[in-house]
Length: 150
Image (cartoon, rainbow, N blue to C red; front, side, top):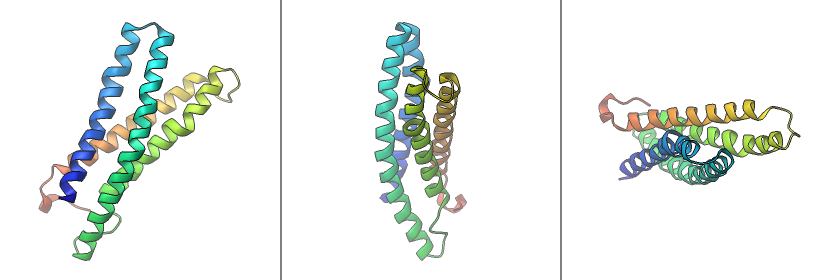
């Protein structure tokens, strides 16, 4: 049951990331004035970052328990690949939003050390990496148990 919940949460998280990055934000810039579109996208990414923190914590607890069960059965390590993917996605969220977003605000105000474009690119890269890790996590969840390692 824990494995099924973990797979569902990972798929929902991936769906949120793909929908926001692939549909909502680009569409906002197509239909809204640039400043308003930026505000809308910023609000969406803020909500996504908060939801990501919650999902990462839930998935961490679930995968930690699953890894512990597998390790006790002699079938793997307590530090599973799935657990590392969840931690990687969490790292991308923390760095990509919570660390870079304040720097982007400073750059917009003209007081930052780096340009807005550079920081936006770094933030976008973190978002893309997070999506890749979540895709790998979901993909691994579709494997049959005997073919799955770690």
